[in-house]
Image 1 (tube, rainbow, N blue to C red):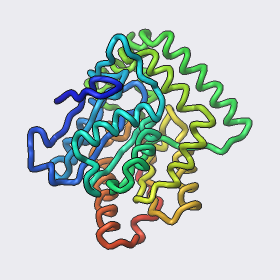
Image 2 (cartoon, rainbow, N blue to C red):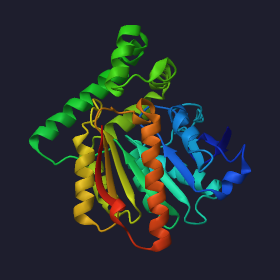
Image 3 (cartoon, helix red, strand yellow):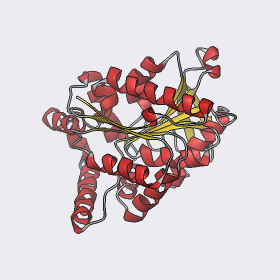
Image 4 (cartoon, rainbow, N blue to C red):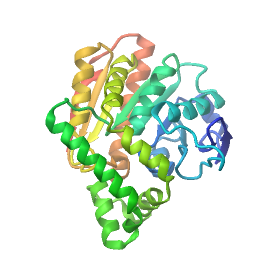
Length: 308
């Protein structure tokens, strides 16, 4: 566990190479968190990937143990969050060769996409988990408006989710499968303790039409293999959006794209079925490594897989 000071904050991060220097020669995996949550929820996946991969998790400004100076409020935008992650990537030297996998969950998928373009020469693969796009229709416009109201309500009354009945409802909306008391407590604790300004800003830009249009363009521009991954029982973000993201990328680029649908999991597949989720990550990483070694795609890079 370490801290890294940058222009935005004093960033808290974990790098598995700190305790095992031999991992510095392994492919690196950077995990980008979702809305109003610290990096603690990646721990089970990190344990599955180690020692084959060097894993880096961190708390974005406004969450977890990362410290924002009292006289300074950084910009809470995709570019701002990408700036602090970029500083960490450079601080750890992850940009020096093509050896980096980036995983973004929920809102973190937008930040991971931005990072994938900034570090395209270092990138082996991207994984976008539960961060989709939607066709612009009157129905989706109403849906985004409703979601914006839900965000306002959640932030103004978020402490009520610490009460046991509402806490259970909060967790059931995020996870279809039981994730156990430890991680249920972490999810609620992180949400209720996150910086209100940061959490509000993230919630709003995640549903902003212009931001979503830019995100769509950027996903198509990633030239490395991309894994689109989603729990089809997700009650937090409609899972169809990730399917649309996959289909849009397939139509508009020849770069390898793979879709994995966990048919009975929700918004937190890394906790709902850690083994199955980690297995799909490893397959994606192995494909990306082969892709760059052989300089040509194969059938594994363009497939749609449903996992029951």
